[in-house]
Length: 326
Image 1 (tube, rainbow, N blue to C red):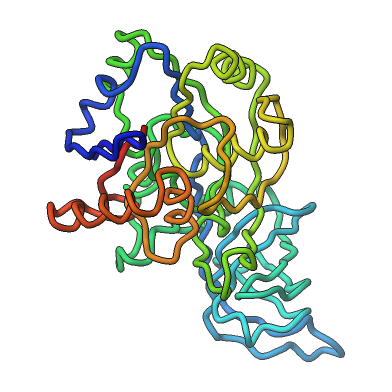
Image 2 (cartoon, rainbow, N blue to C red):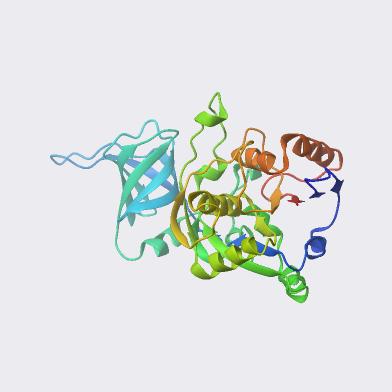
């Protein structure tokens, strides 16, 4: 679906038309984060043994690694989290990986310190599962580690794919190249901040979970050149949009290289400083993703676009269809 913000026009296309919908002066920006098997299934061990007595065991625990915050220390979403207290341990596999609860946070977030021998990433790759979207309602398979991934994924660290990028194929890149359209890559490791629904009474009260990002010097320079020359910056996905707008907000509308974390929440009323076009999938109600898209295109145009999408049978969510907003 193609939306024009200035005219309010809506038209319908195949994604193979994407290069034809752009101008040769545009620069397309992609998120090259890579999903890793962040979902670990373990069992509760109780507390560390004291005076020769081990804690109770057996209950199954699910741990979704979100981001590393220290040496062997990770923030994770733990289910069921309420029963696990500080100091309790969880074992994974045959005991070659153990985690101890260090802190309890909100909405099931816990901080764990892991004990293991050897390489942590190799252990996670062997013991972990691909964190597929829950609405798929099926176990992950060996094929998912490649299928739930963009063709340009490089930087390991995401718990979900940047779904707007899933539409791209080598053939699409060939056509972009043939038409002289540039593209660049940034990294934002998709975490819980992208998918936590808005639960607060007002938008201003909603707090986004921080997510790690990196924009290199080369990419920042090329995007800044496009801004200076008033060429369009086309963001592939809400993760790219939040990263670029976070940097532009901090640096007076300029694009500079930066490594850090962002918890920027974009909702209607936000002033965009960098992004001129957005490719994005169709999102859930009350999601921060839908708020961002509404901020970019305007709530009324998005409501009409979603009405048409439903009537015409567009597919929603991670493996669904997409819209290009210009």
